[in-house]
Amino acid sequence: MPFRLLTADSQNALMDEPDLQILTRQGEEVLLPDASEWIPLPAGAGLISLPGRVPLGIDAQGQVMEVENRLAVAATLAARLYQTRAAGVS
Image 1 (cartoon, rainbow, N blue to C red):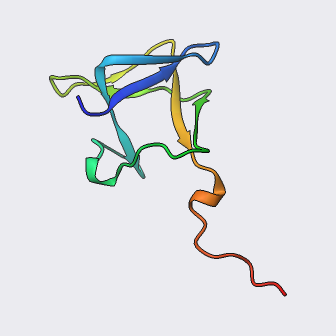
Image 2 (cartoon, rainbow, N blue to C red):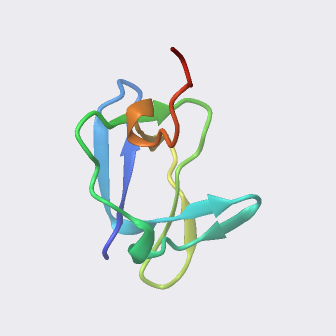
């Protein structure tokens, strides 16, 4: 599996879910990630848990699974990593 699911426990410790691949969301649609769109986490990026969000993964048989008693995890990027323009000042 190229993108294994990461979750967090109630103490925010990261947990690897080796039997599940991650899913992405675009609006209401749940999708497998497109490997060509992913990059390694750059310096300054981080991982955060998302309280109240249920992690979803997909197993080798294509079954979408909710991971119970775990928190969803997301990557965060520092604003400097995706800034396209700076304010014009003198």
